[in-house]
Length: 110
Length: 107
Image 1 (spheres, rainbow over the protein chains, first blue to last red):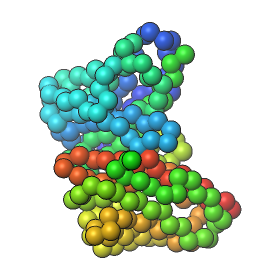
Image 2: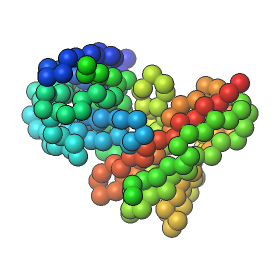
Image 3: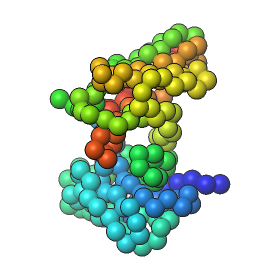
Image 4: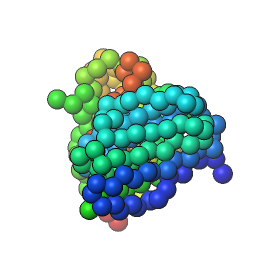
């Protein structure tokens, strides 16, 4: 089946630890995106990548890092520099403006 | 002030009621997107429109470009319609997201 997978669905980490969220797509999309969703707020763009080996900062990139070594994969690392990392993280892919979303990862930092 | 405002933030209704969710925006747009987010978190696209009206099953989306306003209507609502409905506008090659409207339909 074609789609976007994110793993894990729930993730718990201790404060000060880096954590990497996985995003894989088999839709053959060039562009991939990472969003953060907090209660009562719209989605906020963290990073996006329009092609392999290239990515751009979104509106809230501080404390996050990404890589795009393969077309299918766009992992997001939440570093210890991110001051408030507990949130719901959504990965998407697609040709702008149409986007297909993964199921999301809920990260809780204890 | 947010560039995209949705109202209401929360809506609870009885099964069978006609539902309206509103989206107002303050920027110039090329199109507007309505999406649905189920309790599990996944988001699916419902409509993308730049003028007029679109219908799919019990869902109807309208947009008035002059008034910078769009509405999403659900006819004969059902508990399975319970979800967060999100409006996003496409402006200058960016997506600007509304905060969402949480809809609960009671049986």
